[in-house]
Every structure is written in structure tokens, then in C-alpha cells.
Amino acid sequence: MQKLGDILTPNVSLEVVPGPGPKDLLAELDGDSPRPLASSSAWSLLQRGFEINPDGTALIVAQQPSNHLKGLVEPSPPLADCLTWSYKQLRRGAARLASVFEDRQIPPNSTVVHLIPSNAEWALLVCVAALKCYTIAGLPPALLDSAAESELRRRLVLLAPSSIVVENEAAVEKIEKLRDDATSPFLGLCLGPLTTPHRGWMSFCDIAETSFADEEHLIKTNTAPDNPDRTFSIVFTSGSSDLPKGVQRTVRALLASTTAQASPRAGPRPAHTIVTAVVGSNTHTVALGMLYLSWNNARSVVIPAGDFSPAATLHAIERHGVSVIGHSPQGIVQLVRHAKYSQKNVRSLRNVFITGNIATSAELEELRQSFPGASVYPLWGMTEAVGVLGWPRAYPRSVPTHLGVASSGTVMPGGRIRLVDENNCVVQRGVPGELHVGGDVVFTSYVGRAAFPSLFYADECGRWFKTGDVAVLDDDGNVYILGRVQDVIKRKGLSLFPATIENCLMRHFKEEVRVVGVPSSDGGELPYAVFEKTTPGEDAAVWDIDKIVRRIGPEYYIGGAVCLRQLGLYSWPRFFSEKVSRRELKRAVLDYMESTGASIQESCVPR
Image (cartoon, rainbow, N blue to C red):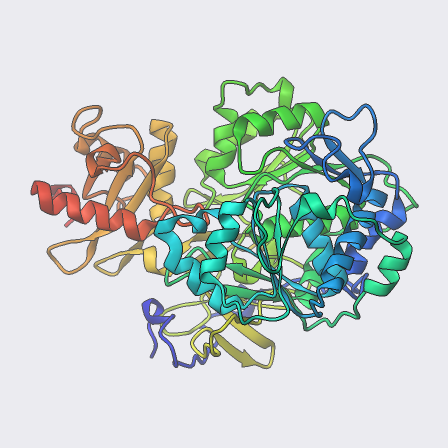
């Protein structure tokens, strides 16, 4: 039988069988029937905002001036203090930019790659990709650093883009050294001016000065027929278990996830304005999803800054009356601990979702107190299966918790889940198991990679994807993501979840803590805690830290503790996706133990 820890081994099939006990107590659940798809293409989703309220505000970009790209869209309203576009202007800009791609003969199904901050140009690219049926792929601008050159080259080879968009001329020169110049046709776009001609490249500054035909004519001539099985986006994973993989999501998945979360189609205009702030990286699935969901519901989108900035975000919330915001737990915590935070300047918020990392009950409690007028809740953000879990009926004012972890909601319409154990049996509710998911929102494949038989299987219910996440399903249908299979700490038949220990220590010490497993003398592992600021042995004795952890239950304890500074680190090691790399953190802990002769506190461990 395949073991849970071997779940990612290639070329291994999986036969899932029912577990013992009554079937209605098994940890498997189907969502409600999928809602009828309201649209047939990616472009039609974005068009709905224009159809409902063409003169309504579609986009506000706080860091760009009101006259930015005025030649493409016509200038913002006279009183605007920053870039402010209506749906009519956004549509006009998309049509005109699409004609540039058409002139360069970039055909449908081509891949457009961008390495730019979140701004108006990015929003236009999303629209153009929908209109022309391109695949859009965002890469972190940090990949342009010399140290990341090999990874950037690897991704460009995988993606084989027909168009690349960068921020400045230095980035143009970098890309030209790496890309395959045999790709034809090709269109390179630079946000800033180009002082030296580069074959195949244009500047947005020059495009904005071009004369264009009527936008209705451009829309008609540039709209490509869409296909639900077309790849609409490629988003790279964090690389927590392997090299970052390019997740291909189809138009069908986009339509299904947007429809499941969309507001009812009421009157011609929304009864009130909902303003969504996109504050995370535009390379993440959630950023694209927020644009589509907002514009499909005729809402306004605010981009406070090119990259996440607590100060800029707080200013944007107050200045523009933002009602919806989402980021990682640590990012939202940065907001409430910033000097400019006050409950007064966030009083417009109604929904604050946390995604990208496990949300502990300690973090959730702090955030609920900081946003008293908002629902604060987690959203499971796995790149391969965004939209399987959520809150289909109403966003909760109070989120249930289990083992110190906040619920990620339940199964969304059209989705299905099951949890299996090491013997591939479906577990009982309330028992941890590996999360398997299915439904139209689940990705189809990784770009440039052959099929992974170890990750997929099919039965009478349909196609399933094995996520590698450990979860619990309770009797009320709430799902709790406890962590990755590879991060579970095993000792003498027990499974200890790092997030549970982290929640306990963060609640007590009021700082970020990470827990990794280190080898013990009996062949198992022991939990080792890493503090952001507290120095074990100086600020707190390891014995006292262990006593705090033991309050969770008799099976919980720690084998040692250290702070980042003692590891020679000044910040958490992170992937390009901004997630903390437990792999790098564990390596740093083991190096520290070896170099200092630090021993595991075996006397702390239950015998």
C-alpha cells in the first residue's frame, strides 16, 4: 500500500476505498449542484461590468497619475487625484491595446508573460488576454535579479511566450539575453520609455500617442472566439515540495469559480458600490480572480501600490472606501500593527479574507478585534484548486476552529472532497487525512510536464487531484487545513501539526513563530520552534516554552527553540510567492544545531 508520505512519488496509482463505519460519517462531501455558467468566455465575464454600469468606476490606481496613458483611454475625471478609469475607459484601452497585438500578428492561444508591478498596464493586459484569447502568465519581477537568472530562463523556456511585458529598459536588455529570439511573431512591451531601439519592442509611452480607430470597431475585429478548455492563465506554485510548477487553469475553471462566487443578477446597476483592493502579488491566482469577480459584478478595483505596502493600503482603504481586501495572515497582521492603523481608517471594510498560508485561531482572533465591522475569514488558496473550498452561503462573523487552525469553509457548488489515510481508505469525520478534491475549478495539468499519475485518479465520481494537504472535515461540513503532508512531524505513531504548536506560541508571545521537525535519537522527529524576536534561553527558558506547548495536550511538546537571529537570519526565508520556506528554515536549524553543538531537549519529550 502507498503511504501518505509517499503520495507525491511519480508513477504510483491510487485506489481509494471506503473506510470502516457508517458512510454518512465518512470524511467526504459534495458541494451543491454547480450553478449554470452565466458566461461563455473570459471576455464576457469582464464585459458584464461595462454592460451594467459603463460610466461607473472600474479601476483606481493610487500610485499612478490621473493622466497616465490618457491617449489610450482618455484622461481621468478632472477632480481625480490619481488614475481613475470608468468601465467605458477600461474597455476602450483594452480594445486599443489589443489592436497593437493584432498588428504584430500575435495569434489567439499565444502566451503573454508579464514581470511588472500591479498597475493600470497589468489590468489592461488581463483584459486584452481575455479579448484576444491569450494565456496570461505573471512572473515575479525579482526573477530579473542576477541570482535568479537560471530560474527565469527555465520559466521562459517552459512558457515560450509570444509577448513579454517588463517595467524598464534594463529589464528589456535582460530578457533579450535570455529569451529565444526565434519565437515569431513576438511583441515586447516596456512600461517606461525606450531610449535605444530594440527589435520587436514597443513602449507604452509610444502606444499611448498612437491614433486608433473607433473602439467598437476594434472590439468587433479583435474579439476571438473562446474555448472553455483553453488555458486562460498559468500561475507558478511556491515550490515548497519541488521546483515551482506552472499550473494551467482553463476558461472553464475560471467560469465555474467566478459563477460560484458571483452576486445575483439583479437590476441594471448595483444597489451600492463595493470596492475591492488588490494588494497582493499579481502573479497569484487570487489577484486575477479578484479582478474577474469584481468586474463581473460591476465593482470598483483599487490598486494601492505596485507591491504590498501596509501604509499605502491603509491610505487607500480610508481614501477610497475599500470594502473587500485579502492577503496572507502575516500581511494583514502587518496592516493592524502599522503606525498608521486605526479602527477609524478601516471602518469601510466589510470583508477581510486571509489566504496563501494557514490561518491560526490566534491570528484570526487578533484580526477580528482589529476589523470590528468586517467578516474576517480564511480562503484556501492552493494554486491548483482555488475555488473548491469557500463560503457559499454567507461570509461568517465567527469562524470555527480545530487544533488551533481556522476553518477554510466548506465545499463550493460543483466541488467535491474526500480525506484518505495512509492505507488509502476514506477516514471518518474529525480524523485527519490527505485532502483529495474534484470539480471543474481544479487545474488540468502543469505546463511542460507530462501527466502525473501519482497526483490524479478517476472513479465513478469523476477526476480527483491529491493536494498533499492534511485536513479535517467535521460533522457540520467545515474543512480545516492543518498543513502539508511533508511538514507533519511524526513520532512514535503520533502526528504533530506545526500549525497547532505555532498557534499556541503566537497566542502567548504575540509574534510570528514557525515550527519544523528535526530528527530525534529514536528515528522519529521532534518539533523545533523558531521565533521571530524572542530569544530562547535569554527572553524565555526552553523549559517554560515547552510547558506552554504542553497545554495543547499530552502528545504536544517541543524538542528545542531558537530565534531567527541565532540562525543568522534577519527575516524568514521565503519563496518568490512570499510563503515561508520550511525546507530552508529546517536546513538552517539543522546547521545551527551542528555548528553550536545544540542538543535536542530529550528530557522535554514524553516517554
